[in-house]
Amino acid sequence: MSFKKSLTALLQKHIDTQQPLPITWRCSWCNDEHGGNLFKKATSITNNVASGDLKADIGLMTGDKLFVAIHISKNKSPISKAVEHYRAHNIIYIQVNPGDDLASITKPFFVGTCLNPRCKKCNGFQHEKSLLIIDSECWKCNYPMKVVVLDCDGYHGGPDKFSETELNIARGRGASIKSNYSNIVKTAYLSNTCPACDAMTGNHYLFSDHYTSAIYGYYNFERVPLGYFCKRCRTA
Image (cartoon, rainbow, N blue to C red; front, side, top):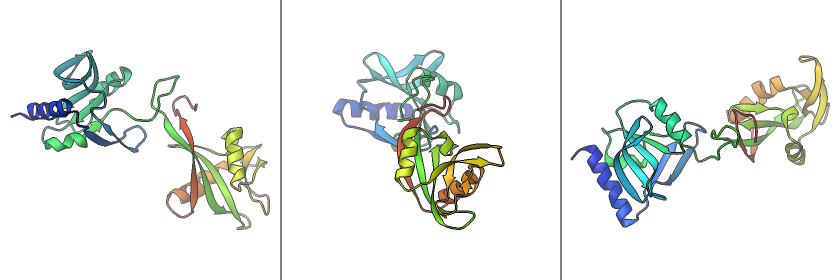
């Protein structure tokens, strides 16, 4: 029996018996590991399901609507046009390798969706947003101090980018944040400030020294979740 027929039979069995089929995948958008039940909404299975100019080898249906498109492919990377098409139509795109055993469906090669909420402006997947409260020290007098960074999965911000709520959280956890004049950018802005000598930790050193050192384990830090953030639109 071919891999496609065997996989179809396995999936049909789960639908007939109403047994869940948990899957996990490393998300290509947020880089977290997600998990879910592949049959939470599935009511039937159809082979060779067309969607636009694409054709899924196996389609999981909710009524007459395609909600999971499974492509069986030996490609070492996801099909880019399939990623965009299925994302635009809110269809989950799964790619599996026919050389794997049937159990591979529980850890597919690629899953083209993220469990994070979508941005209301661009419909893209959002990323987790958090404050890093870093146990560091003043560069000038070595006094212990809290250094705070806004972390949005690759997009970072200093206190000058904080909302009022974020400023209150940072200060409530012991950070000293004041407006300081920077000789580098020739203007004043909100920055982490030493509580002992009032020396500022500017944004350049905030990321190159403190944030990097914390991520690599040289400083202890607390991560405070703040919800989600769209990197494309720069909005929460």
